[in-house]
Length: 150
Image (tube, rainbow, N blue to C red):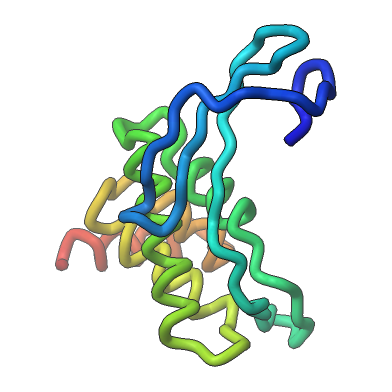
């Protein structure tokens, strides 16, 4: 593992912990050259999962893209990074367990919205506004009214 600061190859593991409900190992490392610390994650390499986009194109599932989308929706909200990581891990596990090799982007978006609805309503509306591509104020109001009714 290369140091992200000085690109040195040699580092030592300071701490290892199980995370994502035992599906990954989080390791704190210290670079032997510059002495800076960084975190790495070790996960089981799983079979590729393809996402079918709205356009019909297929692309490989990208966990980081999912994480960034949820993080953006939760920006400046009282949602911890640990909670976001748990949401991402749960969605990814569910997708891999319940789908053969392909899953639609719509399915992923709905799963994210289901999780965000129960975590933070503002984050839910933010994500929904991008995901559903609100064209006008009425679409936005309709989503908020649906949230209030549930």
